Amino acid sequence: MLTTRTTSYPVLWLRSLAFWIAFPTSIFIYVVLLMLAFPVSHERRWALVQSWVHFVLWWLKITCRLTYEVQGKEHIGSNAAIVFSKHQSTWETVALQEIFPRQVWVAKKELMSIPIFGWGLALMKCIAIERGSGRAAVKQLVSQGSARLREGIWVVIFPEGTRSPPGMHGRYRIGGAVLAEQSGFPIIPVAHNAGEYWPRRSFIKRPGVIQVRIGAPIQPDGKTAQQILDEASHWIEGQMAEITTLGLASPGVSS
Image: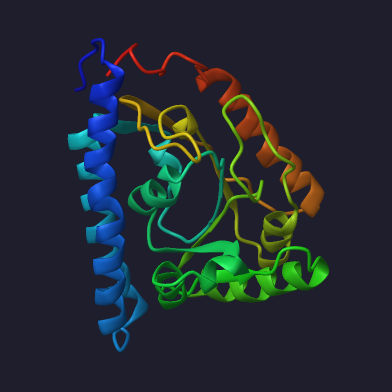
């Protein structure tokens, strides 16, 4: 349990520095290990990734006093599904791997060209979509996403496409809803306020407890892709209105 107390900016900076020293180093080490593990199954590579995820979240708690709590875990079933997550931060790209079962991400294709990081994505069977390719991208998502789901692998999608600052949201793209409509697999909506503690493009990590809310599965039966998208986006943004604190997690307030 984290305690509440005033934290000075220099202390926040030093804690964040300690985190950043280890974070990129750990990515490099684990991608090398993933490359060495290339001959083994995706399931075994996933177990290796899990050890990295546990380390990062543990180190984030130790250095920055930042942790999280989840409401709605009962909605995570034993069968694969499509995760529709709010995207505010780098945090959720790590934490969702601890919260949900074995998964792949839908990511923009240019990430695959990043040395080391992109290699790791490729080894984990990431679905790389080329932005701006319209119907071709949706077709690729449906084809590869359906195949992953039939393998029992969850598919994680950030429907806004890019990170949105706290209190704002981007346009929800329809590709993931089309995947649900055509594959028959449900969507699990996820809301969180990680951007208030780990802001995008920010060196500082603020202490506190990130709120994560998981909604009931949205079944695609008898619904159009647009109806599925509307239902998911309305639930997510409704939850965001409840958990967004806007400024309560600022430096010098709590840890």
